[in-house]
Image (tube, rainbow, N blue to C red):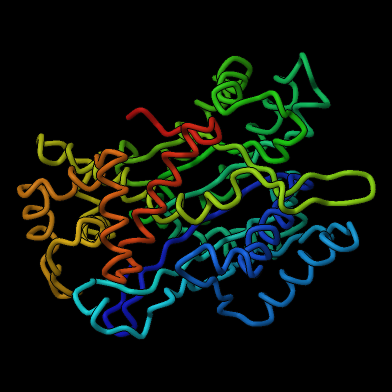
Length: 394
């Protein structure tokens, strides 16, 4: 959601995984890499931890992995949100940003403890803590469910043993939270609507491409994924506007050897920021078609979340079109104008050569926001070509 005061667009991502699935290593690998000089030179923005103490701790973990091959201790029983500001290098250039609906991106990363899935509740206090922890990440548009590569390796040939147990753990854990989260049993208007299935520690399965990962999941655990989809659908208003288990991603935080951790040999980690920024934009546009055809899918989202304002603003920024109304603008008007002009459709369906041209023009104009967003889209497209990422066909 954008704020008129600080012109910030927040994108939230929630990361789920069983204990030992590599969530803390993943987060530290993501942040630590952004602090390297090579990264800063290659990107049009700096990634800054809004909580200095959190940033220092994450970078310490990164350095300990890099220099001493020391992995962090698990973050047991504590749901934590990490906020990172994506500060464009020309943030003070008023001429370059004055016509943009926002000029600062913020990534809020919600880390949900794996132990809360694979251990039973010890009492009412812990049960409430889990509910409160989950409630904090309800603003996320994208959730990433980690499938541990080690679990697949340990069950080679019988992967269904691990996968069924994992998906049942997710389904049962989420079901146990439902009564505490749904007021009077009514589904939520704001709920993570894109659930990506990601193979963590993918370096343990070097011959598996993302389509192969998808096929393993479908062959061995289709019924369990459908059950999880059903459980999640019970949480949200208009469950038709959800993508659960339709997008797939390979992740590897580093290459781990007995005496060293090579953090420069990562897979998919740099995609998490483009994923959080662009995937909701794409998917909301797809869902928006339903309201034009008389469907009810977008009615709730428009009325409660204002997600199409975000989509319209993103489209305008990408295509360098018009300045959209501020927070007092009428959502329905924004949506109608955007759709009638084809703005949303054009922005999401840009061909690769069009993306490159817009990106090049934005760089020439020092419009780093448009350049960054088009680069994010190009990164996702490239990841698909490299068989690291697989978008939903819908």
